[in-house]
Length: 85
Image: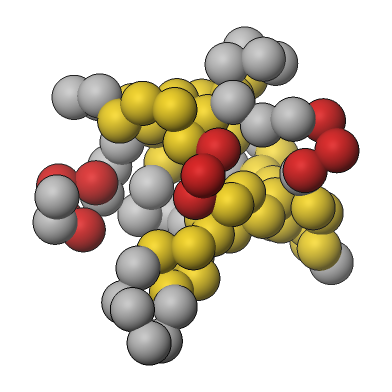
């Protein structure tokens, strides 16, 4: 799958039934040797996404359970979500 095909998909955490953001408004951590995406870095937004709260959520690629036509479904264990300031 191409990155352009992923862009614009909503990112949803299935355990919390929570929309985390949209791919395209996130950063990606990429392994320089393999070229594979290793982590999604999702900014925490407030009030309709207009301002950053100063934190981001780092989600390892292996926690993606399904990439559908309109959304990316994550299954993140509670102890694996890293918040970074």
